Length: 280
Image (cartoon, rainbow, N blue to C red):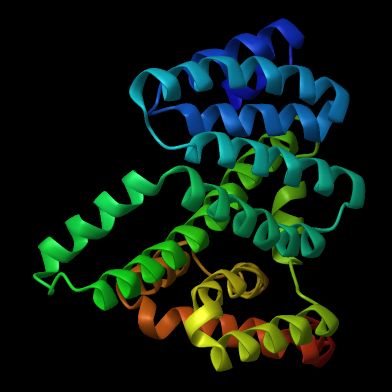
């Protein structure tokens, strides 16, 4: 991975070539997203835009020929936008909040442009779970799938951006991304806004309920940052991280809200600072 980043950073031609090759392969189009984001992070929006335009070309051709959804293009544009925001603001907090906004816009575009694909996914899910094919159940499942897609889109864009940031750190500031991630924290103002929006979505569940999962993404990432910091601060083995992520994946219904709640508490109490102060 580092070798690929070094190749990309050799010059514009290398970056364009690498991004176009990856964008033309459906399995590797996500790698193209991180490549363009790396260029934006290190060389700025103008240079990144040139690479972005070339990366969109083969990706658009593949989508046109296969008739697939615009999801890769949405992820590419959203991630590059987040990379520019992170470069300008140097704030992961603002970047996380805007990831929610970009994902919401992306899922609305997906909903309006991929009606047939979405209908097929819902029908496949209903057939797999053997649910009755009524209009009410169809619409309910459709909302759930859109909610999961929105959350997944946000996580995907942030993962691609973090890969690009890690590449940049490996090349120019070793250990820098680890420090950034360990200090990732949502402040009380943003947390209050997220909680208020969650409450509104809860009370207007029929029309806004599908956005609740998406709104929890900044909290989960902030919670993950705290977990990574705590394990590093206590000098614990990396196997604890492996165990933690295993539990998070297998028992997500329990650990996802727990980590998000931990981030919410940290936003008001600054737990990391308190732990360091207590030890001193």
